[in-house]
Image (tube, rainbow over all chains, first blue to last red; front, side, top):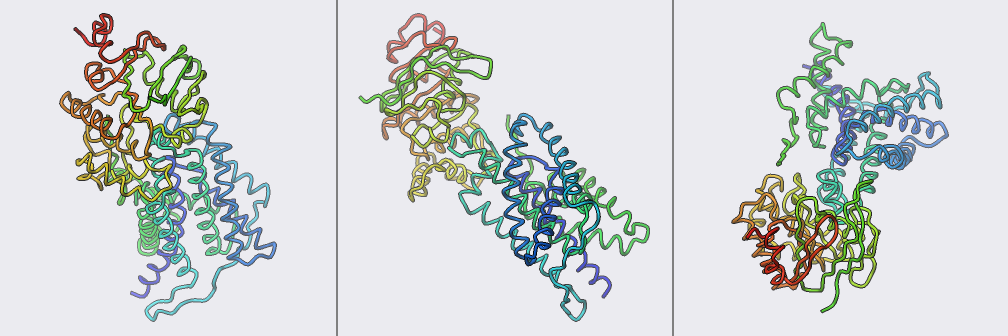
Length: 295
Length: 236
């Protein structure tokens, strides 16, 4: 029982990280209808920025916030300077997806070029643990889950309760009509990319802080878990991304712990398996809306 | 009557394909003006050029100010609302969210009152306010598209083939509602339509568009009795 609870807590902690990156994927998908394969590597770059700021003497929390702001600007810039010239998602989805794959490689190489490929030590936010009697939880996990919930609430409020959120959703639904009602579509796309990069920066920094190390391969695996989480929850649902992330986290940790032949190595394959099953059984995911299309 | 829209020698198209070849038309305040024309004559392109969705050349004056080359959001703010062909509702948004999006350019606090007002005009929309727009019938979506355009409190409503894909009975009902709207609120409308009979019934004046230029114009009654128009567009 104790072991089970330990694993549950570890799984939730891992899942929260998956959920943070999955949220970034969902944000881009919701505001632009695009799967951004570079999301993980953009977050990697942001995380290195956080690390650099800490190196320069900023406290961890301040460094993360500054990195989030810079990432917002960077994400918006990428949309304007690299994505938009390729065309719009409605008419040219494949080219843009391929550009995001190019960005994936470019960001990874850029990180290696600027900061080198050796691992760096990333500080833990909190090193103490919280004793709950039946099990102990590290404060790091508590903080990660807290950040996740806070972020979800903020995003929900922005998307559902503000005019900006309405405009973002309108652009995702029908960009042509959005222009007709006076929404500046380009600005909304830039905002969507900026927001996703910000969320990615937060997720990446928390991930590195949990692992206490940082190297250029950090995000490659995480991205697959995040894709599994977003697929499970539904690509158009932020709540789905979070629930999906937590489920993927707990299930993979449990599978690793209880099924001896899965172990640490097949954990990732398990995530792929999950994506496959969801796509076969319920392609829109747990919380996703079924596509309504009318001719 | 004051001149609301004055377009002269408008040319435009899509990239290398020119569609409009020197189009001239005017709309006075309070009028319903219809543009008739066959498929490919440039009806939709005309409206898209007027509201800034495609690059166009020539002169277009709206309420005394030039709007040629302006961005769509600027033109919407000046009071031109466009109901696009195929309705273009936000399928994933609810009916109410569609209407709020229609008021995007407004900053006043009378938006909820306006939403209620158009719910009264289009009761079907009120019944379905929390339903996704994409799940509604074609006729209901057309009503939503019109109500959404009206939410911007326009001075000129551009309607692109409102009858497209609707059953004859629904189309008739819709045109009656448009006529009522014009009579009760004085809303100026420029309607592009293939159903010439119905459109001329509610219109004050009309134009006939062929190959990207106006070939005939006149009052609705004049067009109805014009031999060529009757043969080509009214079918008798």
